[in-house]
Image 1 (cartoon, rainbow, N blue to C red):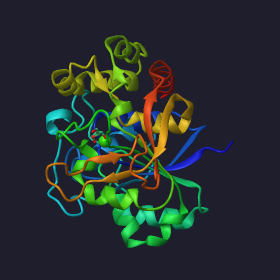
Image 2: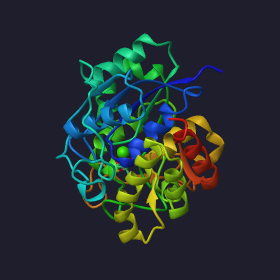
Image 3: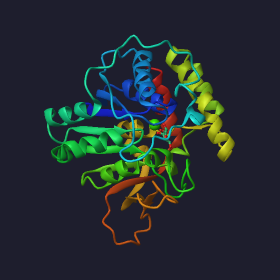
Image 4: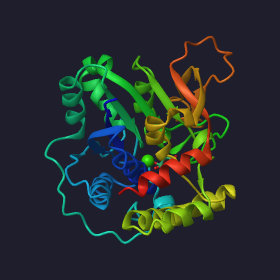
Length: 313
Ligand code: RIB
Ligand code: CA
């Protein structure tokens, strides 16, 4: 079977980096057409630079990386240095990139790629705020029918918020963009905190990354060792939650995840619950289902896949 063509939209972020590495280490299943950076965990200049650094760490210097939107559609940018560090990729010492950004705006790359590739063959994989994807849909409504699927990390239901009591970070940063995505009309698969908070890098799992003994394995161990602090302090977690790698793992082994096809709508009015993903998990609203909202993960299978693929780089 031909590898699945994807665009990774991202705000690296240590967990974004691991998600990108998993994709780049799986060429039989995934063809990364390009990486589009968006402002989120840290400002755009850093998420773009970090995207380049991750491609170089993987030895995949031919992947086009584009800079995208530097602010949410209708709100001030909120960043997460308190989780990811000043650079957004604290932990390992990685060299400044030699690779350059590819000329052009990320939004135009998304539109042009969807118009060029056969309709229904390109999957969008947003790992950060949804600003780039929403802007592309606003600028070129014709692309909506050409998207194979949007597989995103964001939102929460049983887990509720990690940045406010009600909202998960990616959705909270740009709720207006998320609202556009959840109304685009095509296939959506959501990896919420309900799943990603189960994908924890325990010491044993971190030791397994380090035991790979490769520059990539050691860098992943150092990344996850750094960004675990926030969740350990807040939730008493046993390690860093690998939010974004759930997206790329789903593309390779969807059977690792279980969820429900439900209605998901985004709070965009109330400041109290701004950015909440109102997932009708129990089917009580009568609203039409629009997304597969994941609720469970085979954690051992996830880490076995991740460690094996990281080991290939
Ligand atoms: O809430 C977790 C999400 O916010 C992840 O994508 C992480 O990288 C941050 O962007
Ligand atoms: Ca992210």
